[in-house]
Image (cartoon, rainbow, N blue to C red):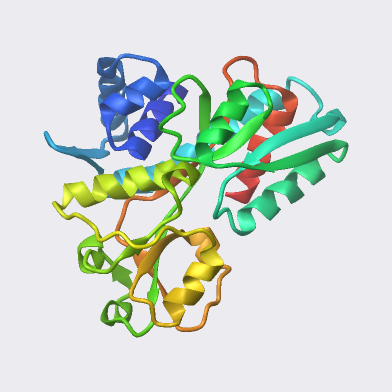
Length: 291
């Protein structure tokens, strides 16, 4: 088994599309397919169900994904450990942040402080597209981006995946279930932040709605998540989507949080191509600890 086989597997598992994964890896699609087939032979298990319309992880693939992600991060850490003593790194790490990171951001910052006490972190909050542009201009060293599909010219490392959660009125009949499908909520107005704030989430939801042949009812855009949840709890017929890490920290009266039957969404640390600076490697190590 080779490291690149795990890299290709993780890319396809995150995109659920061989062509998009190949574009992100900057290689041909046939090379990705060949290495995935070789990995399946070596493991003695089918990792993907492939049809002409969609690609899905098998049960074996779902079990492998978190282990493969952790292995790739560990390999990166091994390479960095021999390169430079990380506890001697100084300066400022300019880091673009994503909405809905929840307690994970605090865990990452604590881990950075432990590993490199002389390294300062400057957090920059920007919409996802603006974060990527700031990276290209050299204004950021790295950025958290959800499912970085618009970053083919940048380097992306997946640091964790998480499920999506529906927030809906506790009095809605669907709230009686522990897991919900998009079809069950399609008649309820869906409220989301503007696309430029989080294009990855919009793309995922639109693709999933298309796959079931449903056009969602659009509600008013969300400016403040807390205000929107208060309105939903007060009886507004609407629902929204949250990341599980963020939902775990929320306690809102009269709002039910229910897991959505959707593919997990990934969080990437995105940087420019080229040698990885020690401060960025410290960030990746800290994300491994938080995941």
